[in-house]
Image (cartoon, rainbow, N blue to C red; front, side, top):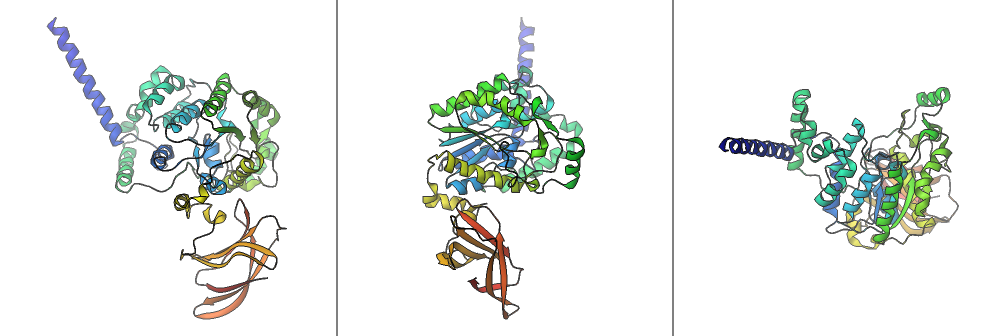
Length: 458
C-alpha cells in the first residue's frame, strides 16, 4: 500500500512542478507571439483602463474587416461620444457574443453595431489550424474568468481547452523552432513593462495605406472576381448567435443593428446570393442592416479605399476606413436617429480626445493651444460661413466651412508670409480634403520655414 501512495505523491509533485513552470513561463511571456503588433491584448487592456472612469457608448463588433475598416477615434469624434472596435482578427460571431458579454460587465454602451463578416459560415468547433490560432489570440486576453469558462466548450474542441489558457502550451515548440523569437519577445515585453503604453487605444489596427494597383486591376480584367457570392454561406451557429447578440442587447436596453463593410465592387461576383444568405440571419432579428456593399457607392469607394490584394479577404486602407466610418456615423445619426450621449459637452471627453485622429477636423483647437494660429472663427467672410480657419505649427492650413451652403471647388487665400526674415505676399489655393461630420474641410500645407502672418479670403 505504501508504494502506490509514494507513486501518487511523486506524480502529484511532478504535476505541481509542471504547472508551476507553465504558470511561470506564461507570466514571463517567454512564448508569446505577435508582440510587435499586440492589438489583441491592447483592446482588453484599454477597455479595463478606460471603463473605471469613462463609458464606452458605441461598440462595433467584427473581425479584421472592422479593425482595418472602421476608425473608432474618428467615429467617436463624429458622434461626439466614445466608440470602440472590438474586432479581433479572424474571429467569428460566437466569439463576438462572449466578447460583448464581458464588455457589458465593464460598461453600458448605448449602441452595438454587428459587422456581417462575422457570419462566415461559423462552425463552433472549426478545427482548421488558422481558425484555432485566431481563436486562441482572441480568447487569451479576455479577463472575465466565468465568461471565459462558459465560452470555452463552445469555441474549442476538448484537446484545445488547456492550450486556450496558456501560450506556453501552444507555442512551446518555439524553444526548438525559433529560440531567437523568445529573446526578441522578452526584449519587447521588458521595454513595455518599463514604459507602458497608456495612449488612447480604441481597437484600430492600421495595416494598409495604399490602394489597388494596376496589376490587380489587370487580374480583375483577366480572371474576374476572386470571391463568388454563391459560395458564401451562413451557418446555423451564425443565425443562432446573431439572435443571441440581439437578445443580449435588448435585455440591456441597447440599440443594435447590422452593418456590412464593402470590398471593391470588382472583387465580388454574384453578391446578391451572398446578401440573401446573410439576410437569413439578419431579417429574423427585425434589426436594421446598413449594407455598404449593396447598393455600392462607386464614387466614394474607389480603388484608393482597398488593399491591393487578389486574395479572398480584401481589407480597407486607412483612407477607406475614413470613408466607411463617416458613412456609418451619418447612418446612425441621420437615418436611425439614435440618441447617443452628448459627451462632446463634457470637458473630460474633450481632454480624452484632444489631438486624437479626427478631433481637429470635428472640433476647434483651444485658443490657448500654441500649436495653432487662429485667423477666423465662427464668422462669415465673402458669403463663406466659416467655422474655423487655423494654421498649425507644421504649416497645415485648415479651413472648415459650415455645411448647408453650396460647396466651392477651391478657396483662394491671399497670405502674408515671412521667410528668412523677409515678408512677401502670395496666394494659396485650398482644396477639399479631410473628413468632418458637420463641416466641409479645405486644406493645404506650406513648406517648413514659412511663417504665415496674415490671411485674407477671396
